[in-house]
Length: 243
Image (cartoon, rainbow, N blue to C red):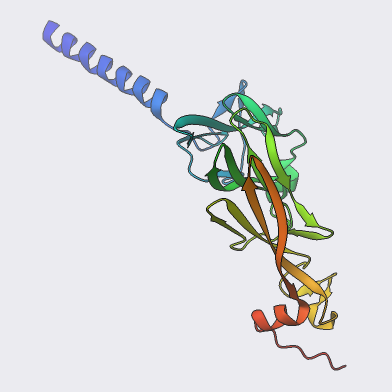
């Protein structure tokens, strides 16, 4: 009997040890996660960070190297409401806050409040990336920050009514330059809430901009523009504007 008792104690001990190890290493990504004493409710992909090193449904940690030294970026939901949804989203680098949104209403606005961080790139002393604040269109901002969280570059509207074009390959890095595609269009087929076929064929509706980093500063220049006629030809739209 003593032999079986000892075996039972050993088995229970191993089970407990396994549970402790599992709990300390498992990345929760569902509604069982608790934060601030409340059970969290967040839709899948309510925030996205390209290349997370450590993450769960409400937190992401990303390590990047600048000038040979590792920098820690964190992205997290905070201020959990009684209904389980977060009210605030905060992003930091090495503990320094560089972005905060404190009026989230994901339970009603859903994807319009999603936070999407992509296109990370180290350029000299800075980390460059894009933030898309919801997927309503024309909601992407180009950022460059230093390792203390100071914002060096923050641009969303590149010229009057000319916004970074979402949902496409809109950014290219090369050496010390960033090329961005911007647009005035509502969609590829709509301008000012009307069919693009009815727009002035000579009007500029899209453009490429190049940001050049030199001596710690970014300068912007429009390098190419695209008219309505060129856009229609580029994506092969068939227009029949006859009544």
